[in-house]
Image 1 (cartoon, rainbow, N blue to C red):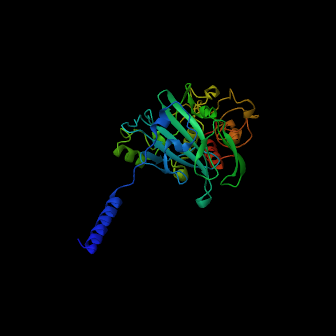
Image 2: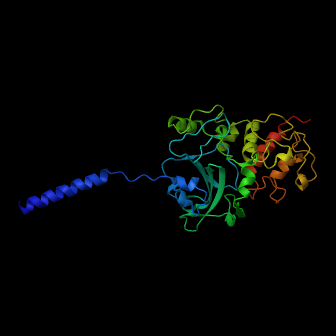
Image 3: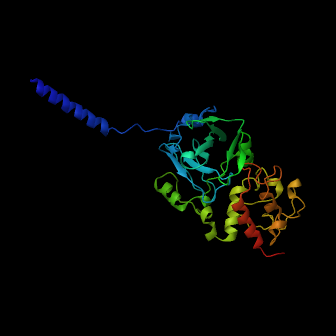
Length: 340
């Protein structure tokens, strides 16, 4: 065989090899199911394998981003939400309420401030559905934005909100997570209720087999950025359902208040209308009723939304500033009620 022929053959093989290499897809990344299910507390967020690019919050396959129509206010933080279900399982829809996530699932929520290149990931909270129930864990991002470390004791971070307010942002400790996620003595998710999820997202998840069926009553709450197109009552009731009802409902941590601020509640007294407070303490100020129809400034509920003083401000956890948009929505609702 002549040398030129050998070189030609080698070049041909090399080219073939190159073609084969290029045709081979990159290995798919998978979530570490053992990190979710085992008894331990992973020290780093990266141990779960939720993200292909953590800094960009780019999820791996089988981790699905979602948003809520009306979100919970957290000092203006951007929220990046994801849900993971393990292979061979399916999420069950049960009416307009919470999706029933199988054991081995996880909910991931990252809090970020700033935009574009200035965006900083502050914390990521994970809810892990283990065999003995849900476990809530907070993770604090490092300065390099490469990973987040378990913060069992919580943390304080000085930052500036989108409204320009300098605050000491609180990352909740492990036990404080239970204050919002506690119901009937157990830890439960509070976000992904079918009524507060996009109809298009639900359809896509059902079509892909991730959810067993289209839930009845889904996509009811208004998109918060389009709340001006919704009724005044719907905007206010959606806000109260998302921001307050996880505590102010039967069986939750503030059930002794007698308030039930869930979306489906129709009893005026349970909503606080002409109801005297039973557990407000100094939070009531010199006001007499939770809601006085037609008179927002005489209503304890709005009074507590309008202050940032610890012990008076509501909600007690998860924010340090007043949500002016939320105050406006609830003020309009109360002002529009027929005086009694």
